[in-house]
Image 1 (cartoon, rainbow, N blue to C red):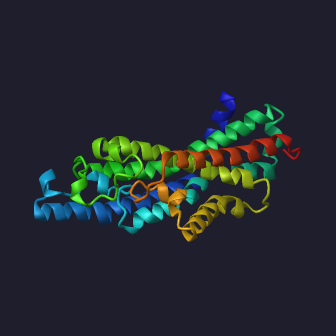
Image 2: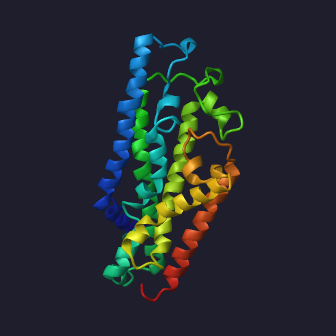
Image 3: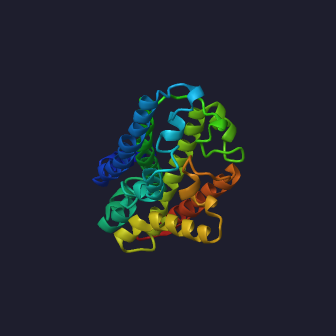
Length: 274
Protein backbone atom coordinates (compact mmCIF):
# COMPACT_ATOMS: atom_id res chain seq x y z
CA UNK A 1 0.00 0.00 0.00
CA UNK A 2 2.80 2.42 0.90
CA UNK A 3 4.53 1.89 -2.45
CA UNK A 4 1.26 2.33 -4.32
CA UNK A 5 0.47 5.55 -2.47
CA UNK A 6 3.95 6.89 -3.13
CA UNK A 7 3.49 6.16 -6.85
CA UNK A 8 0.12 7.92 -6.96
CA UNK A 9 1.39 10.96 -5.08
CA UNK A 10 4.35 11.14 -7.45
CA UNK A 11 2.02 11.03 -10.44
CA UNK A 12 -0.19 13.69 -8.88
CA UNK A 13 2.71 16.05 -8.25
CA UNK A 14 3.80 15.64 -11.87
CA UNK A 15 0.33 16.45 -13.17
CA UNK A 16 0.36 19.06 -15.92
CA UNK A 17 -2.70 20.78 -14.44
CA UNK A 18 -1.31 21.12 -10.92
CA UNK A 19 0.74 24.25 -11.79
CA UNK A 20 -2.33 25.73 -13.51
CA UNK A 21 -4.50 25.29 -10.42
CA UNK A 22 -1.79 26.72 -8.17
CA UNK A 23 -1.23 29.69 -10.46
CA UNK A 24 -4.94 30.53 -10.51
CA UNK A 25 -5.14 30.27 -6.73
CA UNK A 26 -1.97 32.32 -6.25
CA UNK A 27 -3.15 35.01 -8.67
CA UNK A 28 -6.26 35.53 -6.56
CA UNK A 29 -4.29 35.39 -3.30
CA UNK A 30 -1.53 37.75 -4.43
CA UNK A 31 -3.93 40.19 -6.11
CA UNK A 32 -5.83 40.41 -2.83
CA UNK A 33 -2.58 41.24 -1.05
CA UNK A 34 -1.55 43.84 -3.63
CA UNK A 35 -4.89 45.62 -3.99
CA UNK A 36 -6.39 45.18 -0.52
CA UNK A 37 -3.77 44.51 2.14
CA UNK A 38 -1.25 47.04 0.85
CA UNK A 39 -4.03 49.61 0.58
CA UNK A 40 -4.88 48.99 4.23
CA UNK A 41 -1.23 49.45 5.17
CA UNK A 42 -1.04 52.71 3.23
CA UNK A 43 -4.12 53.99 5.02
CA UNK A 44 -2.65 53.03 8.41
CA UNK A 45 0.62 54.78 7.65
CA UNK A 46 -1.15 57.92 6.49
CA UNK A 47 -3.38 58.02 9.57
CA UNK A 48 -0.72 56.66 11.97
CA UNK A 49 -2.99 53.81 13.14
CA UNK A 50 -0.59 51.27 14.60
CA UNK A 51 -1.96 50.55 18.08
CA UNK A 52 -4.87 48.51 19.34
CA UNK A 53 -6.39 51.68 20.81
CA UNK A 54 -6.57 53.19 17.33
CA UNK A 55 -8.55 50.25 15.94
CA UNK A 56 -6.21 49.56 13.00
CA UNK A 57 -6.49 46.94 10.33
CA UNK A 58 -5.02 43.65 11.55
CA UNK A 59 -4.09 40.34 9.96
CA UNK A 60 -7.22 38.55 11.08
CA UNK A 61 -9.70 40.84 9.40
CA UNK A 62 -7.61 41.59 6.35
CA UNK A 63 -6.17 38.34 4.97
CA UNK A 64 -8.01 36.56 2.16
CA UNK A 65 -9.88 34.28 4.57
CA UNK A 66 -10.78 37.08 6.94
CA UNK A 67 -11.97 39.71 4.47
CA UNK A 68 -15.69 39.54 3.63
CA UNK A 69 -15.79 42.79 1.68
CA UNK A 70 -13.71 42.25 -1.46
CA UNK A 71 -14.19 40.25 -4.64
CA UNK A 72 -11.08 38.09 -4.29
CA UNK A 73 -12.35 36.40 -1.13
CA UNK A 74 -15.75 35.51 -2.59
CA UNK A 75 -14.18 34.40 -5.88
CA UNK A 76 -11.66 32.12 -4.19
CA UNK A 77 -14.24 30.19 -2.22
CA UNK A 78 -16.66 29.94 -5.15
CA UNK A 79 -13.84 28.46 -7.25
CA UNK A 80 -12.66 26.17 -4.42
CA UNK A 81 -14.17 22.95 -5.88
CA UNK A 82 -12.66 23.69 -9.31
CA UNK A 83 -9.22 24.41 -7.85
CA UNK A 84 -9.44 21.20 -5.84
CA UNK A 85 -10.41 18.98 -8.78
CA UNK A 86 -8.20 20.47 -11.49
CA UNK A 87 -4.81 18.89 -10.58
CA UNK A 88 -5.62 15.17 -10.33
CA UNK A 89 -9.31 14.40 -9.86
CA UNK A 90 -9.71 13.17 -13.45
CA UNK A 91 -6.77 10.76 -13.17
CA UNK A 92 -8.94 7.72 -12.43
CA UNK A 93 -11.04 8.48 -15.49
CA UNK A 94 -7.88 8.71 -17.61
CA UNK A 95 -6.44 5.53 -16.05
CA UNK A 96 -9.55 3.62 -17.11
CA UNK A 97 -9.55 5.07 -20.62
CA UNK A 98 -5.87 4.38 -21.22
CA UNK A 99 -5.91 0.85 -19.81
CA UNK A 100 -3.34 1.81 -17.16
CA UNK A 101 -5.46 0.15 -14.45
CA UNK A 102 -5.24 -3.24 -16.16
CA UNK A 103 -1.47 -3.08 -15.92
CA UNK A 104 -1.55 -2.01 -12.26
CA UNK A 105 -3.96 -4.69 -11.04
CA UNK A 106 -1.71 -7.41 -12.44
CA UNK A 107 0.98 -6.26 -9.98
CA UNK A 108 -1.04 -5.32 -6.89
CA UNK A 109 -4.49 -5.71 -5.38
CA UNK A 110 -7.20 -3.58 -6.90
CA UNK A 111 -8.25 -2.36 -3.46
CA UNK A 112 -4.74 -1.00 -2.82
CA UNK A 113 -4.77 0.93 -6.06
CA UNK A 114 -8.20 2.39 -5.31
CA UNK A 115 -7.23 3.40 -1.77
CA UNK A 116 -3.99 5.00 -2.99
CA UNK A 117 -5.86 6.84 -5.73
CA UNK A 118 -8.47 8.22 -3.34
CA UNK A 119 -5.88 9.35 -0.79
CA UNK A 120 -3.62 10.95 -3.41
CA UNK A 121 -6.49 12.86 -5.03
CA UNK A 122 -7.65 13.97 -1.57
CA UNK A 123 -4.23 15.18 -0.40
CA UNK A 124 -3.28 17.01 -3.60
CA UNK A 125 -6.68 18.74 -3.72
CA UNK A 126 -6.32 19.93 -0.14
CA UNK A 127 -2.79 21.22 -0.67
CA UNK A 128 -3.72 22.99 -3.90
CA UNK A 129 -6.44 24.99 -2.19
CA UNK A 130 -4.70 25.65 1.13
CA UNK A 131 -1.26 26.70 -0.17
CA UNK A 132 -2.40 29.99 -1.82
CA UNK A 133 -4.30 30.85 1.37
CA UNK A 134 -1.12 30.28 3.40
CA UNK A 135 0.83 32.51 1.01
CA UNK A 136 -1.74 35.28 1.42
CA UNK A 137 -1.78 34.83 5.20
CA UNK A 138 2.02 34.98 5.36
CA UNK A 139 2.21 38.12 3.22
CA UNK A 140 -0.53 39.78 5.25
CA UNK A 141 1.17 38.86 8.54
CA UNK A 142 4.39 40.41 7.26
CA UNK A 143 2.55 43.63 6.38
CA UNK A 144 -0.09 44.21 9.07
CA UNK A 145 0.01 43.74 12.85
CA UNK A 146 -1.30 40.52 14.40
CA UNK A 147 -3.30 42.35 17.04
CA UNK A 148 -5.78 40.35 19.09
CA UNK A 149 -9.25 41.04 17.61
CA UNK A 150 -11.62 43.08 19.74
CA UNK A 151 -15.35 42.63 19.21
CA UNK A 152 -15.89 46.32 20.05
CA UNK A 153 -13.88 47.41 17.00
CA UNK A 154 -16.84 46.69 14.75
CA UNK A 155 -14.72 45.68 11.76
CA UNK A 156 -15.04 41.91 12.22
CA UNK A 157 -17.98 39.82 11.03
CA UNK A 158 -17.52 37.08 13.64
CA UNK A 159 -20.33 37.29 16.18
CA UNK A 160 -20.85 35.43 19.43
CA UNK A 161 -23.02 32.74 17.78
CA UNK A 162 -20.57 31.97 14.97
CA UNK A 163 -18.37 28.90 14.78
CA UNK A 164 -15.33 29.07 17.11
CA UNK A 165 -16.11 32.73 17.90
CA UNK A 166 -14.45 32.59 21.32
CA UNK A 167 -11.30 31.12 19.77
CA UNK A 168 -11.24 33.90 17.16
CA UNK A 169 -11.14 36.59 19.85
CA UNK A 170 -8.70 34.79 22.14
CA UNK A 171 -6.44 32.67 19.88
CA UNK A 172 -7.02 33.92 16.33
CA UNK A 173 -4.21 31.91 14.72
CA UNK A 174 -5.73 28.75 16.18
CA UNK A 175 -9.05 29.84 14.66
CA UNK A 176 -7.36 30.27 11.27
CA UNK A 177 -5.66 26.86 11.61
CA UNK A 178 -9.01 25.22 12.36
CA UNK A 179 -10.59 26.71 9.27
CA UNK A 180 -7.63 25.75 7.10
CA UNK A 181 -8.18 22.20 8.33
CA UNK A 182 -11.84 22.33 7.31
CA UNK A 183 -10.91 23.81 3.93
CA UNK A 184 -8.36 21.02 3.37
CA UNK A 185 -10.97 18.40 4.33
CA UNK A 186 -13.71 19.66 2.02
CA UNK A 187 -11.28 20.32 -0.84
CA UNK A 188 -10.33 16.65 -0.75
CA UNK A 189 -13.96 15.59 -0.56
CA UNK A 190 -14.96 17.84 -3.46
CA UNK A 191 -12.22 16.31 -5.61
CA UNK A 192 -13.45 12.84 -4.63
CA UNK A 193 -16.79 13.65 -6.28
CA UNK A 194 -14.97 13.41 -9.63
CA UNK A 195 -13.76 9.92 -8.74
CA UNK A 196 -17.32 8.74 -8.24
CA UNK A 197 -18.59 10.52 -11.37
CA UNK A 198 -15.88 8.75 -13.41
CA UNK A 199 -18.06 5.64 -13.36
CA UNK A 200 -21.12 7.33 -14.87
CA UNK A 201 -19.67 9.78 -17.40
CA UNK A 202 -17.67 9.19 -20.56
CA UNK A 203 -16.71 12.85 -20.84
CA UNK A 204 -13.53 13.99 -19.13
CA UNK A 205 -14.66 17.60 -18.79
CA UNK A 206 -17.89 16.59 -17.07
CA UNK A 207 -15.82 14.54 -14.63
CA UNK A 208 -13.52 17.50 -13.93
CA UNK A 209 -16.38 19.99 -13.62
CA UNK A 210 -18.59 17.77 -11.46
CA UNK A 211 -17.22 19.06 -8.10
CA UNK A 212 -17.64 22.70 -9.16
CA UNK A 213 -21.13 22.11 -10.56
CA UNK A 214 -22.13 20.18 -7.44
CA UNK A 215 -20.93 23.01 -5.23
CA UNK A 216 -22.82 25.63 -7.24
CA UNK A 217 -25.99 23.52 -7.29
CA UNK A 218 -25.95 23.01 -3.53
CA UNK A 219 -25.26 26.73 -2.93
CA UNK A 220 -28.06 27.79 -5.30
CA UNK A 221 -30.57 25.34 -3.86
CA UNK A 222 -29.83 26.25 -0.25
CA UNK A 223 -29.89 29.97 -1.10
CA UNK A 224 -33.39 29.57 -2.54
CA UNK A 225 -34.40 27.86 0.71
CA UNK A 226 -32.81 30.61 2.76
CA UNK A 227 -30.24 28.23 4.24
CA UNK A 228 -27.06 29.12 2.34
CA UNK A 229 -25.14 28.85 5.61
CA UNK A 230 -25.17 25.07 5.12
CA UNK A 231 -23.38 25.30 1.77
CA UNK A 232 -19.66 24.49 1.92
CA UNK A 233 -19.00 27.38 -0.47
CA UNK A 234 -20.40 29.63 2.25
CA UNK A 235 -19.33 28.18 5.58
CA UNK A 236 -15.77 27.35 4.47
CA UNK A 237 -15.01 31.07 4.19
CA UNK A 238 -13.74 32.02 7.67
CA UNK A 239 -15.07 35.56 7.20
CA UNK A 240 -18.63 34.49 6.38
CA UNK A 241 -21.13 35.71 8.94
CA UNK A 242 -22.79 32.34 9.55
CA UNK A 243 -23.80 30.29 12.56
CA UNK A 244 -23.39 26.86 11.01
CA UNK A 245 -22.65 24.43 13.83
CA UNK A 246 -19.61 22.18 13.78
CA UNK A 247 -21.82 19.07 14.00
CA UNK A 248 -23.66 20.10 10.82
CA UNK A 249 -20.38 20.74 9.02
CA UNK A 250 -18.92 17.39 10.09
CA UNK A 251 -22.17 15.65 9.14
CA UNK A 252 -21.86 17.06 5.63
CA UNK A 253 -18.24 15.95 5.47
CA UNK A 254 -19.17 12.45 6.59
CA UNK A 255 -21.97 12.31 4.02
CA UNK A 256 -19.60 13.32 1.23
CA UNK A 257 -17.05 10.77 2.42
CA UNK A 258 -19.59 7.95 2.54
CA UNK A 259 -21.11 8.81 -0.85
CA UNK A 260 -17.89 9.38 -2.77
CA UNK A 261 -15.94 6.65 -1.00
CA UNK A 262 -18.85 4.21 -1.13
CA UNK A 263 -19.41 4.63 -4.87
CA UNK A 264 -15.71 4.68 -5.70
CA UNK A 265 -14.65 1.64 -3.67
CA UNK A 266 -17.75 -0.51 -4.12
CA UNK A 267 -18.08 0.16 -7.84
CA UNK A 268 -14.33 0.02 -8.34
CA UNK A 269 -13.90 -3.35 -6.68
CA UNK A 270 -16.88 -4.85 -8.52
CA UNK A 271 -16.24 -3.34 -11.96
CA UNK A 272 -14.73 -5.94 -14.26
CA UNK A 273 -13.68 -3.20 -16.68
CA UNK A 274 -10.89 -2.34 -14.28
